[in-house]
Amino acid sequence: MARVKLQGLSKSYDGAVAVKGLDLEIRDREFVVLLGPSGCGKTTTLRCIAGLETPSEGEIYIGDRLVNDLDPKQRNIAMVFQSYALYPHMTVYQNMAFPLENAKVAEKDIVRRVNHAARLLQIESLLARKPIQLSGGQRQRVALGRAIVREPQAFLMDEPLSNLDAKLRVHMRAELKKLQKDLGITTIYVTHDQVEAMTMGDRIAILNHGELQQYDTPRRVYVHPSNHFVAGFVGSPPINSIECTLTKGGVLDAGDFQLAVPDHLQSGIENAVSEELLIGVRPQDVEVLRDSTGRPDCIAAQVYTTEPQGDITILDLTIGDRLVKAVVGIAFDAEGLSGLSVRFRPERILLFDRKTGKAIG
Ligand SMILES: Nc1ncnc2c1ncn2[C@@H]1O[C@H](COP(=O)(O)OP(=O)(O)OP(=O)(O)O)[C@@H](O)[C@H]1O
Ligand SMILES: [Mg+2]
Image (tube, rainbow, N blue to C red; front, side, top):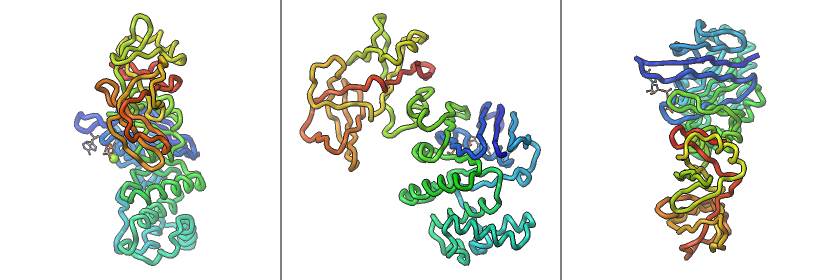
């Protein structure tokens, strides 16, 4: 069994906190993504699990073993870095065989394991080449192969796709996800790319300033973000955030418009400690209507600019002096339109406490 468990993991460098009290349990065979902005502590967490950094506090378990005092070698994990760090003077075969030779694995097992990994990664025809004779994507697969041959208890991957061009990254994302499921090896994968996290992870752990913000499935993180930071980090284009005040009459007053509190937030709002709130509505949940039909839930908006993307268009709209983005389908023709109206789908509206950022409801 290769569950990985972090308990109160903290790491400081000369008093500066990189990771703060992190509790995280990764189930056997699970693909968990650590997601967050630059400097939030992703790599530090991974390096602590690998044994390349010593935690300032907390326990790390791999399987049922407490590994805090074990060397990286004894932890039976394989790490794939952003820079593939292949040995330039060795062939692809030698690069993949190297960790096994180091571990004194029998020659015939080395041959079997390298060939098996090469077959999985479709690099059998490249085994005799040197890294310099490979494309970026091929090198990336060799680096993965070198991790796979070790048959570790867990993979730790630090932005392994970030050196690839956009198209190859999308391709490798699917390949890697499939491979992880086929191999059934517990994987912790670091990225700052929310699309990568959403598409690949069974669960996503979102970090900010070294602290865990939310740990949940991609769907839950998207639909029920625990706070405003998570809501803003996940989803593209980013969620619209609109400051408002909860009036005594129980209405959300944004200045330029007012909204009724949606049904699903009624009970949450009763427990809200502050009236100073943020409305969060994703551009996909902003309905655009060509004319204001006089419906009370419609808000007048002006077209600021349009961002066609082929299958969809992002409409940049102004409501008063606020900019709000809406996603419309290919059939929507904004040509010549200036004024229109929008409706925030009430069942998709989110509310946050403006001070703490915490989700209401
Ligand atoms: N060896 C070190 N000495 C001092 N500070 C460090 C060291 N390594 C990391 N830090 C600091 O710890 C914090 C977390 O760094 P970390 O590398 O874990 O971030 P990250 O989330 O991986 O970011 P990125 O997405 O840019 O790779 C940062 O503020 C960084 O400056
Ligand atoms: Mg990093």
